[in-house]
Length: 280
Image (cartoon, rainbow, N blue to C red):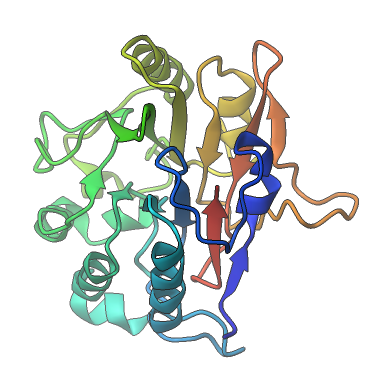
């Protein structure tokens, strides 16, 4: 199987002493998160015979079969990049992701490429929780489709999730996000994460589509460095491959100090569905 899996689970094993990436573990307090970003309508394997949704599905099922609590998350830009999107406007990607059982999805900038009405049509049919913490859709066709955060109970622990998106101005055609109001992402992330912790979350995970470090405005590193209550950032947009197992000099850092000196994890899987991230 040539779809790669980034074994982030093993790199984070310190959070769950004695855990294993592949060993069956029925611990009620153990959560495995699988994540993708920027898969860009790559339904079939690429020209190097990497990726493809059939292989991804097999890998997802194998992890679910070995673990009691598994969540599947996408960090945006699931569309735009092949004829599947050109011809069917997101229907194929939506049906495939529903079939794979995604638990959480957030918007990328390319989700807006066919306009708000087409986006609303497809996303109304998603089975996943639709997260957006810093977009106000109250005056748009997407009103009521998104929640700013969610909490999930895993054994006797509670994990909170927030979704942070980029400023569409200058990136998305203005007529394609009519009625959307953008809220500063760093401010929104801090406020919502603090609220979740106050409401009982033991950990907060930010799912973002803003870029790792090289985007205008703010990035995953900015979210991490300015945060106080976020524990993990699952990112997208910049197509950055963050592999904790890669010890070479100059590779993207995956452990970042936050505003109070705690070290949190910043993760991303590249693009086109070649990698599937795993956090244990």
